[in-house]
Image (cartoon, rainbow, N blue to C red; front, side, top):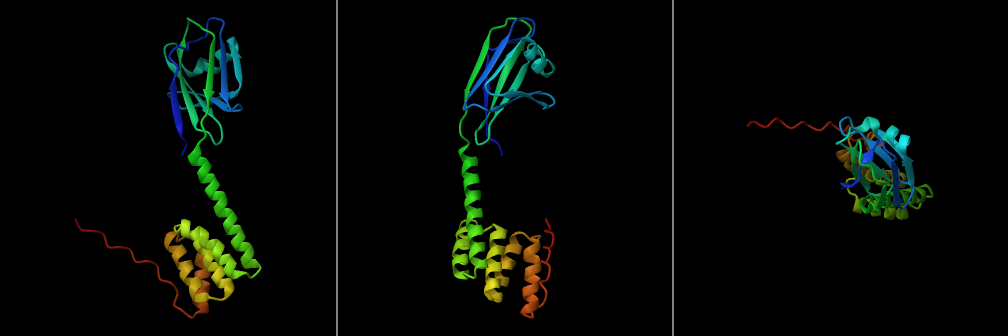
Length: 217
């Protein structure tokens, strides 16, 4: 989910009848600026910062996105930064030369999520590498670092089950495949491997979970 900051610029009037200049500067640069139609939600790319528009360019950019007296929304977006939405009033007259200077803030939550995702992938890749070289204990140590922090991550549980399977510990393998399926019943690899292990251990096929009876109110 994106983070947004809304800014109202009350002194800025974009005029289509006089000489007009609009500058948009961001820190850092190379942010994408969109014009948004408030009614339809339609987006039109204005450009990448720094942006400088004059006269006909401004008319072309804003004319279909609002009428004099209305507001038009500019959305300033850059990867790993919080989106800034700026409301600009439109006017048929009363132009002033306009410059918008926006300092973008880092989206720390998104960056942390991406960092966590990378760490998970790195640990899972390392666990897989150890398992392939038959260093099963080291593989389990790495995958446990993921499982301990993300116990609901079914694919990590399934990988742990696969390591036990490769190690020859089929009973433990089945236990972890079934834990993965409790969280994500449609995880194909876990479904197929759990069935294979049950067959190997001469256990009955897993029965589908019973549906709860509807509550009587």
